[in-house]
Length: 31
Image 1 (tube, rainbow, N blue to C red):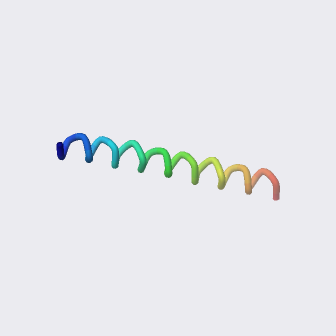
Image 2 (cartoon, rainbow, N blue to C red):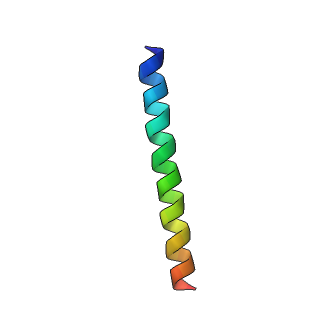
């Protein structure tokens, strides 16, 4: 059970990381 929670946390963390990186690159491109 803990491994499932850890896997979900890792996936959500990587999604947030890639999303923030994508947002930052879009903001930089529009400047």
